[in-house]
Image (cartoon, rainbow, N blue to C red; front, side):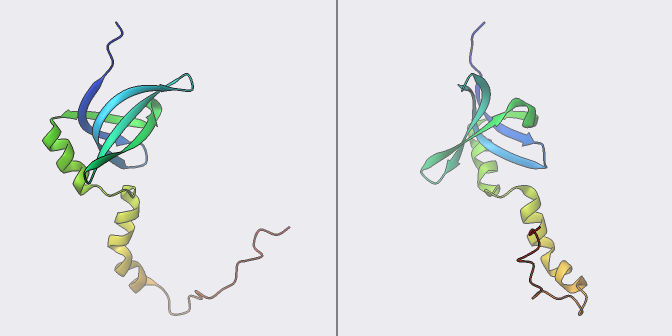
Length: 109
């Protein structure tokens, strides 16, 4: 059977990331990829994932996928989680921390 998968939904990805939108299959360079057209204002932005990057796929209706996409930024989950905890991280810093240290020659052999 050669029916192509197409549905609205939410995908959970390895690395604690999530994305929502219109999900379909696409072959690029001979490889099967999962295509997600994410609602972005009046249009869409398209993202492709290999099947091995996907942890779970939840099929929803269009309204639920669009609502989920609005709540998800373009940053991976860990980025906004770090931003949420930034005040705690800064409060825990030692007064002796030297933010002005020069690491420019760190990778030189």
